[in-house]
Length: 408
Image (cartoon, rainbow, N blue to C red; front, side, top):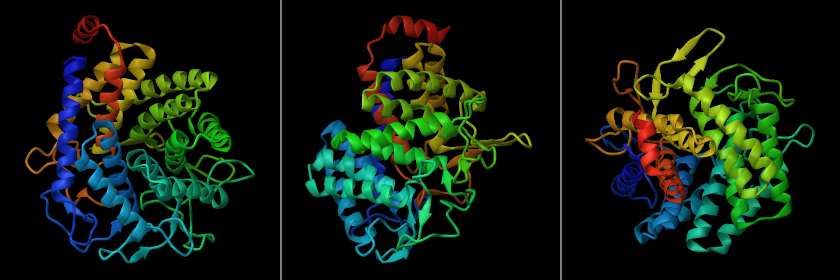
């Protein structure tokens, strides 16, 4: 494989992903199905998640912004209006975690992660539709997060609140997460959301918060010894647990640099370039010989979770392309190619469309997982395609030299 064919295959796969969600996920209630399984069986009364709907909005807005395809803008319009009507809390502001299939509030807690994703998606939609109300709402959500979630004592952001913004006992984003006041995951996606907001609202106060967020990763979240991310913290940034999430490691490696570049801060860019390559090198230990990226590792008991989920593969392609562009070391491009080979062979659902949730150690498809659901969205895989297409179009390379090095 060479860079040109890689880009062409990313364009083809992007079309496949977007077509699946257009053809199979629109429902009769004016929104999108809450759950579809691997065989494309629809669970018509499944809850609808704010994260799923925000990621649909971001995906089709970003696809329209990249291609100008009006069909994508229509889906983005639909997602925007559904979120605005059913997910935004008209009384206490913010967004519900979930609604039922009729659009009625279900889980009304204010998970900051979810609000950040809606903010992220609204900013992308603003670039598509130039809807001033969308920009106004995005800025309002930024101030909402800063008002309720920002920790003025030690920095960073608290996880979750009740519907009316009071304290909660259970702050967890999902059942598998530790119940801690601060997490890497929420900070990563606040960073991503604020970076997208900065592109449409480059205010001085937002630039300050973005720099602080990057520095929080550099000071507290990226482990200085291992170059992996620590995942859970108390309010004083004491680390809780030592699980390694390879997918988040490689995702953060390129998102941090993206933020520094958006700020056009040369010192911060230089620091993030160094750390992005260190993190990519650390993730290499999670690669299997087939090119796939394992899910998680527990150093305390030397336990490797021998599953390969769809989203770490998507992030691996982008992160390794980013590391290649930063370092000019062709080994990273080779990792990206090998990961794409793995995805094509094992993760693409060639019969029913989209990507499987993941596979087990014996290459069997993981059972009981969603193809569409609260967490299974078109965001990671479509974003990987969009990001790689953009990067390879912008990158001026000596193709002959790259091909020789990759094939050696």
